[in-house]
Image 1 (cartoon, rainbow, N blue to C red):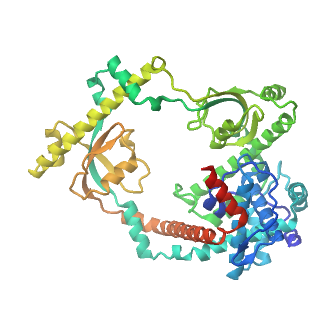
Image 2 (cartoon, rainbow, N blue to C red; image 1 turned 120 degrees about the horizontal axis):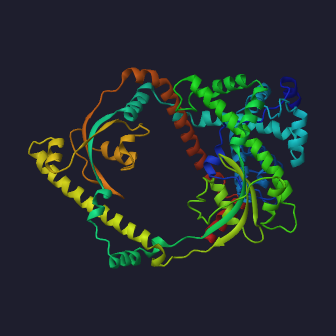
Amino acid sequence: MIGTIRKHSKWLWWFIIAAIIVTFVFWGVNPSRMGGGGSVGDLGKIYGRAVTQQEYVEARNIFYIFYWLHYGEWPNRAQNFTDKDLQRETYIRLLLDRKAAALGVHIGDDVVVEAAKDMLRSAGRNGKPVEVDTFIKQVLTPEGLTAADFERFVREDITIQQLVQSLGLSGGLITPQEAATFYQREHQELSAQAVFFSASNYLSQVAVTPAAVAQFYTNYLAAYRLPDRVSVSCVAFEVSNFLAQSKAEWARTNFDEYVEATFSQYGMSQFPEAKTPEEAKAKIREILIHNRATADARQQANDFANTLFPIEPVKAENLATVARQKDMTVLTTEPFDATYGPREFSAPAEFIKDAFALNADYPLAGPITGPDAVYIIALVKQVPSEIPPLDQIRGRVALDFQEREAALLAQRAGTNFVAALNVRMAAGKTFATASVAAGYSPEALPPFSLSTPELPALGDRVELNLLKRAAFTTPAGRISGFVETDAGGFVVFVQSQLPLDQAAMNAEMPQFTTQLRRGRQNEAFNLWLQAESNRELSNIPMLRQQAADSGSAR
């Protein structure tokens, strides 16, 4: 088979823009550190048949290739991936393989060849393609993987797509009439007015006294506890610095042809914000350029790490030493907590998690890939949880007290307004007239539907979803009642439902129907996978032990 691929394609393409990641969706796994991953002893049964050591190893190897293609590293070198994660992923793949065999799913060699060419694109640099033999020798062989493992991976990936289509078929059985009903529900616009009650309008009415502030501080002491914090130093390899190089590298390939092939495979469905095919293709180009730039940034970060981590003794100061050697800037963050991360930049979740895992024995971590940069970090200091005394945060506490009291005043005013409004409207007054008579000016809202992504007219007064929930549960011609928010609240009056734009509906229905069917199909498949896994994998010895360990830890 690999020989056939060699005949059909001069090189293997490793760059992936999108793929079905069934097991990650089900198990909720994030990339991480593990060792080994081999299995001994009783491997359990799936569908009544024992799992052999060879089957387990082959499934594990397939997952290794899957992981490398999607994350650019092997799972045994990832920061947040454990042996337990690997075991679960391996068994999911074994289950899917057994189900495919039972259903008679067979993937022909020609399909595997074409899929290998379509899924994997040029990993070359400076316009030089990666030969298949080089890919096997330099990528697979050092990890103990073979050409046969790669062939099995490609075949299984196609098999999973076939399973999604067949086992999720029930979810995709949506008639045009049903799709039209869903479209109308999502796009039916309302004409509405609202009156907002903002705490900021009542701040001047709050008396802020030392005694009141002290009492508020005592009552809400836990709210002022500072969590455990950590400060780190880091070297950042900014993706933006590699965009020009990425564009140049793509320019030396058949970039436009690959963009067209990708668009042909996924169409408009993967880019709901795109209004035309050209916009979708532009997004594909942007993603490909950004992803290659990220890979280049990570390669440079890897080179930095290969210099840093072997230094003995291992200590945080080594980061600055290597940075000076390579003429790079080291940034030191202020202490930050695990919820919000550093204030100096927007750090990915893995950065924050790895920062809090640092200690004196393991003061270094990385490379950590984020959407904008790749980071290598070192521990500066750990700051334990504490509650600052009132004198240190009096200004903040006073402001919190004032804002809370103002919000309560706003909510009280809103509740009283609704009571008066109901009386006046029952007497025949319009919403606008009754509102003005009560001393408030109603605001006409732009038309909106359940699918409206944003409503700038709201500002930061209320979350759009909260407004939608209130409006779309209120009959036309009625008021919603007072809806509380953290900073006050609002009342919405639904005037009417607006006519649908039939021309827009006719134009958008094909894409909407396709997206609806695909979403329902994936949902149906994942529900099947969850039920099947819970039944078939619950008695696997190593997975049962994982569940027991997790239960005892809680």
